[in-house]
Image 1 (cartoon, helix red, strand yellow):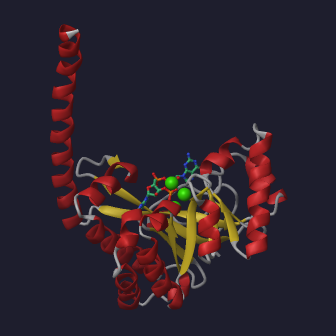
Image 2: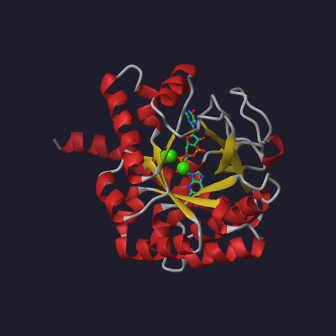
Length: 275
Ligand code: C2E
Ligand code: CA
Ligand code: CA
Ligand code: CA
């Protein structure tokens, strides 16, 4: 048994060291990337499924390294959170995204993601409003995407932050709806402007009859609460068709437009245009 234990432990130790070395390196690189503003927002269109018009864009962070390689947000956002870099990174990205949004047609909305841990920062709302004010982007053109887990972590502070923002005219979207553990209680506790149905529902709902019913029910729930419903991850024409039939308000996905840098925000496959 002793021998076996050794065999199990041995390969585990170096891999942990590798992990740590990698982490330290990524953290240092990230710090420098923020300093050099190498992390930039890409924009994915949000499309009105009735009129086929773009109503705004979601900003999605992209880290373009010196070697031209792109690191996706799921890899560096958690590092930024743990390393205490998320505040600086968010301020920088938001400032940049708001400035970009000023160059869009007036009615288009900027949707911006907040990390769960940020909602336990009492001053977040005021800092965001300060940035909007500095840049000169009206609050009604900004929507912030938060997840359920973000609100549950520190409900009291989250409420203070969201109230600051909502009172100033910023809209709040509940992101990744259906994947958390307390969706319905959050819906009755806070007034969201929008619910974003998670991609996992959209990608499987044609092959899964129950999933179809779930989407239908969420759309009905939205209608009852007066909340706009967005479906994420639309990749197929048939998914788009079905969501339109079900009366889903807004769509987002590769079919309607992939995330792209500011310079490339023009037309897309589904024919939706920046009007
Ligand atoms: P999310 O907020 O749920 O964003 C949607 C993700 O789905 C994006 O991944 C987007 O590129 C991807 N996506 C969009 N349409 C499709 C589709 O049709 N098919 C598929 N397979 N994927 C699609 P991305 O850009 O890699 O971002 C991943 C996550 O990272 C985001 O998930 C969000 O939670 C987080 N994130 C991105 N940017 C930021 C940021 O600036 N701040 C914070 N705190 N989080 C961010
Ligand atoms: Ca989002
Ligand atoms: Ca989402
Ligand atoms: Ca997500």
